[in-house]
Amino acid sequence: MNTSSPDLAVSDNADQNRFELRLNGDLVGILGYYDFERAPAPNPPVVDFMHTVIVEDFGHRGLAAVLVGGSLDLARSRGWRVRPVCTYVQRFLSAHENYRDVVVALEPPRTEPKRTEPQRTENRRRQPQRKVPARKA
Image 1 (tube, helix red, strand yellow):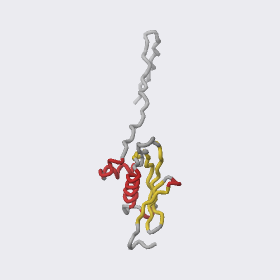
Image 2 (cartoon, rainbow, N blue to C red):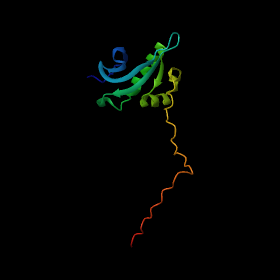
Image 3 (cartoon, helix red, strand yellow):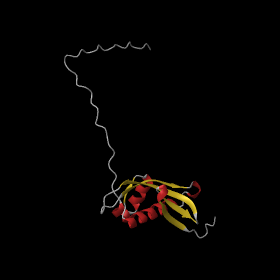
Image 4 (cartoon, rainbow, N blue to C red):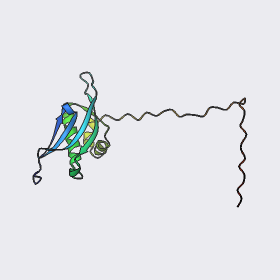
């Protein structure tokens, strides 16, 4: 593979629900998405960006940022709204505020209500406390 003059391209592989990053024609990264909410026209669809993966041999070269930026550009051009589920996409967006118009906020995680201990009633018998024998020194 010739990397002296890299040719980077981000494309949409809709059959696989992913954006692909190709370096000189070779697949080096993917950003998986899920079309979660098909909104009725004229509302834009909301698409979850689920995970970003770069081939290990090409890590730490800034290619993930190229992939995410290109994917967000394609989403914007299609009128998509993006929900950043992937933590890398979230970090990218915190550093690139120019994509805020494309982003839909994540819903806060659901939390279960706190469990409380049942109230003691006066009619309940108290259990005697055990006495622990003292240790000999």
